[in-house]
Figure 1 (tube, each protein chain N blue to C red):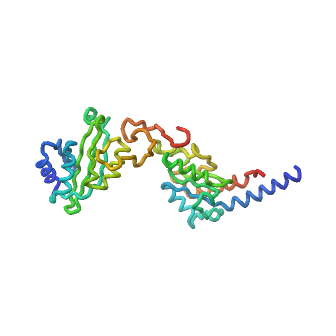
Figure 2 (tube, rainbow over the protein chains, first blue to last red):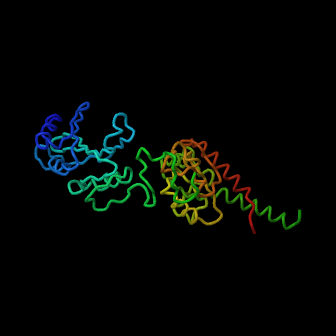
Figure 3 (cartoon, chains in turn blue, red):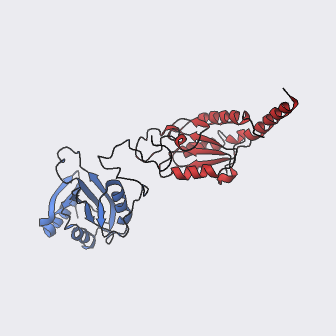
Length: 165
Length: 152
C-alpha cells in the first residue's frame, strides 16, 4: 500500500480521532488523539492490509520554544512503523500536555517499546501507563530532571562524585 | 652529601630507570580515542619500544592508568574505583581532550576533565591525539617516573 492509501485507511477507520494527516517528501504521518492511540496502533499491527509488524523507533519532541507551537501541547510522542510483509512505512504521532504527560504504553503490542519508552521517560519525562517497569534507562537514578527538555539548562551539572563545575 | 644519601639517590635512579621501562598499563577505553590507542600499540608506532607494550586487564596488576575516551558522570564512580584498586606506585594518563577538559561535550552527561575525580600525571590533548603525541606523552611520563624520589 502506498502512504496516501494507508492514511486514507486510517482516516476511514478512526476519522473522528485523527487530528491531522500530512505527507512530507513521501513520509506519511497521522496525528491521532491519545484516547484512540492504542486502537490505532493495534489496528496498524493486526490489520492484514497494513501489517506493521516492526516498531522502528519511538521517541518524543519538546515543542516548548518551537515557533508557532509555543501555546499548543508541549510534547509529541512519535512512532515509526514498518511492515516487513508490504515494505511500507507510517509515522504516528500523539500530542500531550506537560501537566498530563502520560501516554498508553506500546509494550503489549511491540516488546521493543520497553526500552524506547524508558528512554523517552528518562530524557523527556513523558510517562507511559501500563509499562512493566518505567525506570531511567540512560541516566542514573539519582539524576534530577529530564535533560532533553528544552528548559533544562545546558550547563547544569549533576556529578555523582567530584566537585560540580 | 653523606654516604647514605649518595646510595639512596643512586638507588632512586636505578629504581626509576627500571620502572620507566616496565610500564604495565591499564587501558580504560570508553570512546573513539580507543582506535588511536590501538594504532599506537600496533607495529607502526609500537609502544613496546618504550617497555609499555603489555596492557594488564586487572587494575591490581597495572601501574599506569590510561583513561582513553569521554567519561560520563554515570561512569565516574567506576573510574574512581578502578583508580583506587591500583596499587602504589601508580600514575594516570589523560588520553584525548575529553579526559583532559571534557572537550566539546559541554552538557549534562560529561565529566569536565577527569582531574575533577582523580589525580592526573600526563595530559595528552587532541581529538583524537596523533600517535606521535601519545609517544611524546609517554616519554614525558617516563621522565616523570625516572625522576620520582622514593620514600624509604
